[in-house]
Image 1 (tube, one colour):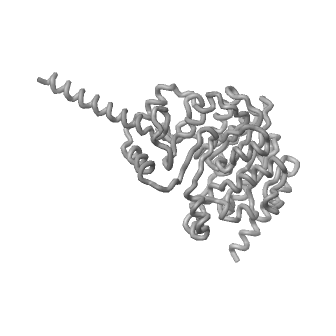
Image 2: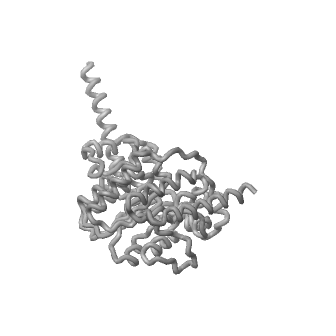
Image 3: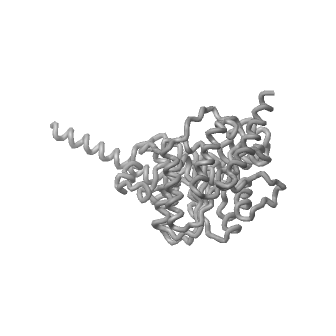
Length: 351
């Protein structure tokens, strides 16, 4: 009798597991199994995995954009038009410098690289560089992380009823499109927010543009070491690398400790590389129309950045203080300018 009950219990468990596995594969919210294409909009898949899978195939890309979600503003079509290279965007939400290093290591081992753009963020230097192993959205491809493939895929079978429910709702019931991802280019797009900005920018700014509610710590030495390691790696492979400090919103810039920020600039150019710095205060970073929120610039800003680094000017706007190529030769002059504008704004806010 006990044996019979045990068999029934085991059968029920196996049936439940089978149903769960079938649902997970059928909906495939993170799109890692490749057997379903249900999740097409609004729910972010595991882009890290999908991009590496794409680059394993016959793709034709010979140039790459590396960085956090902020480099999503750099459109590969614009980059190709200006540079002549076939760019692919490896933007990854929440990526710190250690993860960017891991991507660079995989790229130099597996791809033909003619040029590369590396986007840098000051606040990313405070990240610990470790991620939750069960954060399925940001889980790195096993070829980059070194994790065993079986363990990688096993984690995506975890029962997540809320996730499956949300995927169904966002893809079936939600008429607006807040998020799109193009595997062939690596680009992510936010059509609904662009529509809101075009419809009523002032209302959008009041809702979405607010200062950061955080206190920044100290730059972690391990992150500086990872950056130096990446510079040495790409230099040793004679890759044409363009280092770019992403143009953060002026409210983000105001929240930084300016002395800590300037020390970070010194440490970057101290590696012997030139860096395009698009931070600071100018008519681009001070115009909230150019941003989705203070963390992410829109494509119109990304196009200005690309035009500046590839042509040396911004023909669409009459500006001369957006983007400056800094090096060990002009870093102190650049810092003096940056501090001057920073403290001038601080005084105006006080008064």
